[in-house]
Image (cartoon, rainbow, N blue to C red; front, side, top):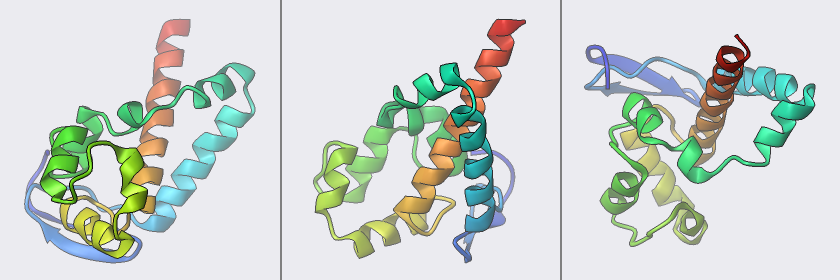
Amino acid sequence: MSGTAGIIACDGYKELFAGGLSIMTNEEIEKQFQQYLKLFQSDAELTKLLNQVTFEGLFNPDFLKEHSKFASMDDMLWRSGFGIVNLLEVENVNQEKWNRYIAKNTECSTWFAFGKLAMGEWMKRKLTENKESAN
């Protein structure tokens, strides 16, 4: 995590978070997500990339270190105490408790918002990679 201690927000949720994660509201996450999604949907090659996205690609160590207290996806799952070993199993846990865990340890107050943030960051990274490979 970078920066100093700061206030974080997502879905209107605010918490003093030592480590200084950035402030981003649910509305900002949604706006960013929709902007990137439109770009991807308007280009056949980029649309193909959407079909290749994985949990590992979304919740990669760089993303997790920047937007949460976790170093990796395994770290996030293990520290949760829910006994899950992969993200597909998140559906099987109490969602209220899972969202509290996410709110306590990430920039977002819900798993859904954290997933949208991850998807927006993934699309941003893929656009950058595509621009760099075209040059």
